[in-house]
Length: 169
Image (cartoon, rainbow, N blue to C red; front, side, top):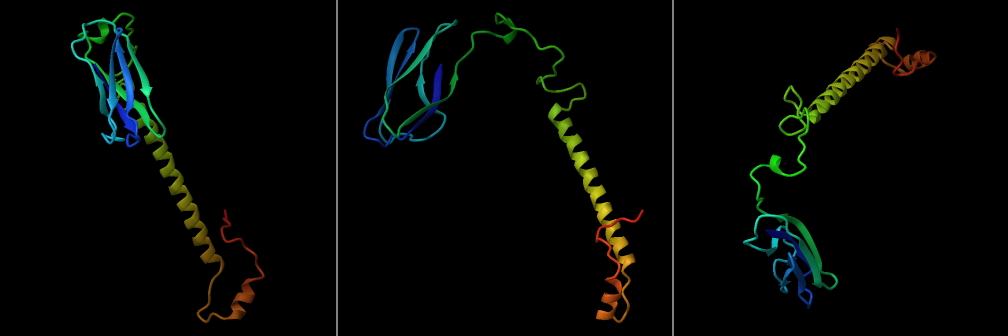
């Protein structure tokens, strides 16, 4: 069994100290000044030779000063069972794929949802592009420009107010 975590701010004047008790047997471990400061997944404590069965682990931080910090990333242990199905209270998940999130077709639920939203976004972009293209095409037909463009042409067409994206049906 081992505890992995992070000890930060160890450059402070006092070492960070914690006691680790397994089934009533206590060991005190200190993190010395300037050692593996802020390195995640560092082994903070380990105990070997535990008999198979249930055990009680108690971690007590006995000495810590500001700005020091102590965090547990995970606890690793060797299981004494050959299969999870032999554990008391084990209940299988019905109708689940290998990971519990796969469907009969092999695609995960997340992949299917992503494909649906991606397809809808593509259709929406194509429709928006079509309407913008049609509006632009309609705008160029409504306002013909002569070869000799002058302010007179602009004044002649300004009498007809047509919004730039109006659609003619």
